[in-house]
Structures are given as structure tokens and as C-alpha cells.
Image 1 (cartoon, helix red, strand yellow):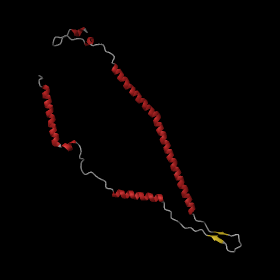
Image 2 (image 1 turned 45 degrees about the vertical axis):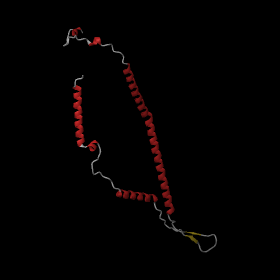
Image 3 (image 1 turned 135 degrees about the vertical axis):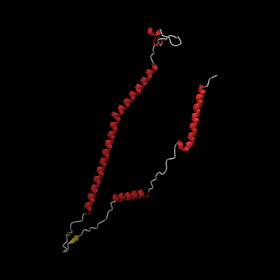
Image 4 (image 1 turned 90 degrees about the horizontal axis):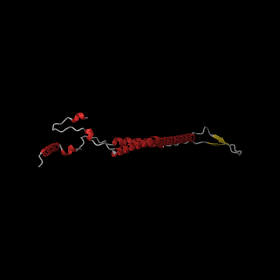
Length: 190
């Protein structure tokens, strides 16, 4: 690099080769420690994501499937109970086909006839009545509920509190601060 040693700058000083004057690079121990800590954090985060994906997530899915199966089994059981109760109610409400004579073992000439009395009783469907009543109540509440609507712009924020004249005044104050700061910087120091 002797080629550049012959040149001088405007003040007459010779250029110095920078490669010769720089000290040898030392190992930057702080950088290596910081890089290894960040690498360790990244590896730890990747391990946590892998554990979550391979262990926790399948357990959550299995628990969700079990809960769905249990709910389905319960619904099936309720439907079966309702079907059985409806069938037994229907069987209980069927009238006898015809009155049957009952003979007594005594030698009485008149046969005793048992007559089935069919007195229909109206059993209200409590579930349907409750559902209808709840639906009518919700409809009445919907009709009577007043929904608030906005008729004005929201009153919030800095400009609403200070106003435009205050903002203009603050603009002039900040411009004055800028000019005074520049003037103080350029002023000669004693």
C-alpha cells in the first residue's frame, strides 16, 4: 500500500494507511453471549410450540370429543325417555274395545257387566306452554324496548377540549420555541 503513502491532504499531512494503524480485532464476548442467549430463547420457544402441538392440543381435542359424545348420549337418553312416556300415555288413554260380561260363580240368572268409563282428561303440554309463553314474553320485551340511537357526533378528544383557537396558539408557541432554540445554538459561547 505504498501507493497511497505519497499523497498528502490539503493541510500537508500524509495519508496514513488505516489497516496498519487499527488494532487487531478482539473477540467480542458480549456479542457472543447475547447471540447465544437469543438463540437459546428461540430454541426454547420452538420446544414449547412443539410440546403444545404434540401433547396439549391432542388432549384438548380428545376432551372436546368426549364432551360431545357425552352430550349426544344424554340427548339420546332424553329422547328415549320422552318416547317411552308418550307411548305409555297413549296406551293408557286407549279405551277398551267393548264391555265384557263378568259371570259370577253363583247361579244367578243375571250376568254382571263391567262397563269401562272413558272420561277424557286434558293434560296440558307443560313444555310447549312454557316455550310459547317465553316466546311471547320475548316478543313483548322486544316491542317495548327502546333502542338508543346516536343523533350527534361523539364529544371526545383533544381538539374538542381545547378548540381550534387553542391549537393555533399552541402552534405559534412551538414555532417560537424552535426559533429561540436555533438562535441559542448559534449564539457564540463566551
